[in-house]
Image (cartoon, rainbow, N blue to C red):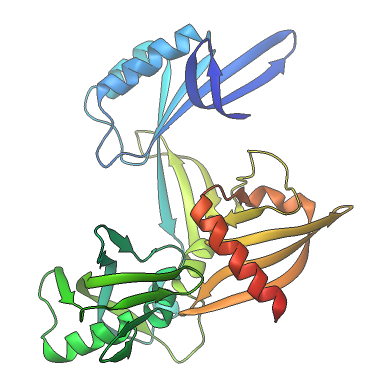
Length: 318
């Protein structure tokens, strides 16, 4: 299997090559994550690409389904259409003792004094951590984004509909983000809505970790028949190469980031550099067999790598 393959100048998301008897076979796969159903034109485009590549089979996978007419075009040209869905296997009743309304906050954005904006990253519990641990320094004192929202909430009723709230900051305010430094800011804007949350006296995992454990990924045909099902955390993702010491990796299912400290035989030493659980940063060092390396994907974002280097340096000094 090859990711992001190019054949005769045509790019395919995934190609699968195998040999059966004396014959070589090629399957080409395109994956679409659109906000709406896939139009017929995309199926036609795959028909042409697959023929140019002399593919034996072509598959088009969508997260949102297909528009009317796609099935007929696919059937005439031997294209297989599949829909991928995520389904949570956990029953709410198994962990929830009571439900209560709460304020959900997202799209937390600071307006920079010199122009532009800075949005607090919402990935794997990081937003919760930054809301608690970032600091806004001003002449009137020090506050966190969480405390600013709490102050606003005490003075305003819960919104009946999702609402975007702008809060002007005192002149000369400075935002300090852990491991990212300082920024001069003039306004804090966030989107909020009321949702039902689960309360229980028993300890539970953070929501993004629990979702990684309980989410089942299903691949279905247009008739709704499940063709393949796998737990999200079990999907092998390390298709871009082997694990190498000194590089940073992430585990998308659980939204954790790691540093490969070294490899000795069939054992990898990992530093868990970035894991957010209930608004707190959790770090650790552990060993794991190389056979599980397929669960990790290389981190390529330069800004994230810079932050992870600072976090790793601080962790090693502890």
